[in-house]
Length: 390
Image (cartoon, rainbow, N blue to C red; front, side, top):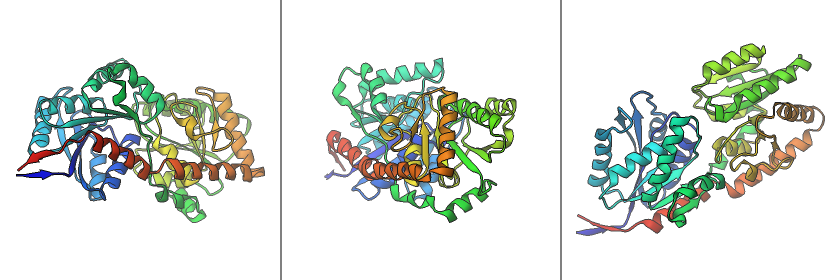
């Protein structure tokens, strides 16, 4: 008999593609590689909506990543497989990353000497069914040892569900700052724009994320339409990176507004660096957010940001200092902000450069992946109880 001192953590995610939460998980796993602990990511591969992008990317980076098939809301075969993995491989902690993962992870770990951690990346309240699942997850959180919220507003939503408020912590998302700092160069921009058939003379806005109501694509398209009605010769383009349920509706809206030649839908895009390298401005007209990874990435890459003050965005974007803030659903205000950026580009580029520099400094100082990882390690270490294994 011997003591096993190394932490073994199973990260569980029911993934709908590769978005912000997947980026956080991948960044965390990469940073933990050099630590004295074992990590594996396990994706619940939904039969009706299969997505293994997180697994594929993790494996490319040499990380331990596997998936299990799931054929329903509560697939007890899948739950038993998770339980078998936890038990036979002596995982110390199960770390869940969404409502389905929380339900499956809790059921799979009942009666086992496994500590439970869950990260709430964001409750989107997308529809009645989703709100119901999120409500159930809030109740299930009481059976976890520690709950992590990625922002203060997310924590505020979770806190009322918890009998023990002390188990809730806030850990802001972090990124590999150095991995994005090279994107501002002229050569990189030229290569990236060629990929999307953009001219070097174009003024390019970008919006990145799921095609979902939460992201506010409609308000950006209407703002662009307003601008082009009075400035028909503007070489304005919008790069729309992402896929989702609103794909058809948004394309119909673009056609109705008469701006289809100005909008480029990339579909699912697995190369966020090319997108950030191609655009002049990232626009985030979101109705709700946690702490968006793409916001950190854009700021680190030297891309100016126009965003709404939702979630933890106001912590990063100080209006006129690290970017520009516009109220949600404010089409006129968004159009005015875009025009301000365009005018600054032509007449007062220094003011935009100052905001970009301030944004870079902020991310490097407070939102690095190293800082995020250290905070997770502290949580893991705090709740871990070494076990006797043969």
